[in-house]
Image: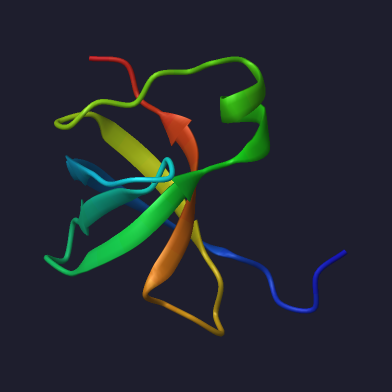
Length: 73
């Protein structure tokens, strides 16, 4: 169990970067770098620019996150 619980926010994928990283713009307008969670990689869930996603942020570093869910259109 983690010391601090993660912060979950909604965002939209803006750009796909190298090494399976993405630039995500959150609802409040901030941009972060995020990578897919392990289960998303395991089940080959594709993430494309324009997709709405849920990102888990650590309270220690609010500039990087983990994509935990891709919402259906």
